[in-house]
Length: 336
Image (cartoon, rainbow, N blue to C red; front, side, top):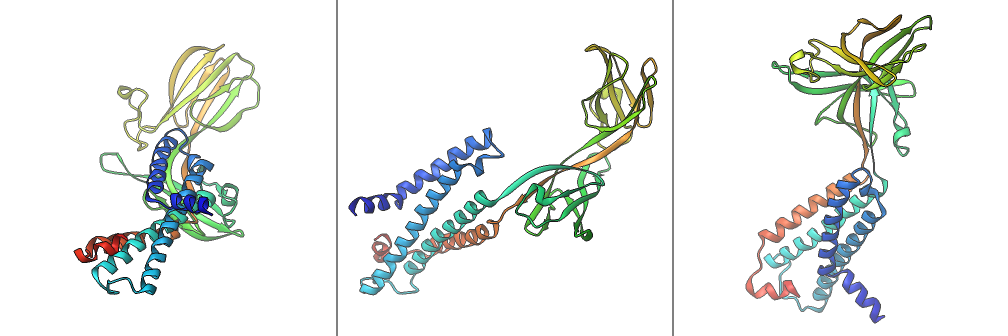
């Protein structure tokens, strides 16, 4: 029994709490750098969170036990609403708030989910394929657009989406930077964007082939030893800027491509949208246009509300503990 008491005393001590906070801080810094997408769901981080949660919970319980024992024994000289009493309540609330924040963080670490997805304009994604715990619905991207300032710099990125349940649109929403979608416990954030290039290839007597390609995709020309690298879409092309666009506004959109034979570069060129280019004898490539896709981050944070309540308690407790100062004659009671 004595060993168990010593173990509990150590686990609930301030020294252990400070050690665990330091361990969480250091491991988070290292994990965020090397494993940013998986560290916070790793067993190591979850164990450290659980130990800190136990530490803070035991500290809070011990403080409550002290208050009850002192009240029952009649040893306490402080009045229920004296400065020292309110300060003590504030400290307990601070500890309890931190415990609740840790509970929320643990819930998120165990049951939270975050995934980055890309959805082509006009297509949809079944959310429960990304987050199995989510209520089934389809997130359909109706339109992706960029709004511009007068100087052609982007002012906002917007994904206009529809929420589809049982084949019917139940909600429409515009996701933009700092304006996420919240639906059925899921949050969707605007993260990035890109373009797929609509390319059609016709070589000799072979049937034409049309596909949507990502930048830096390679097309092998049937019946030849040549290949075309569809290198980059540039919305606002200017020879003076080389491979970099002047702006994201499509003032002069072109596709940069290069032609190879047996791995050796033959030439580099650019074509406007809709142009057909003869890249080899009787081999043609048509760049019909581009189709935008949006990059979204889909998150499920089941412990967020719990952590928010704990955060409010923590701040309120800190305010009470700092505002209400105990008298010198009451300092001893606070530290016992």
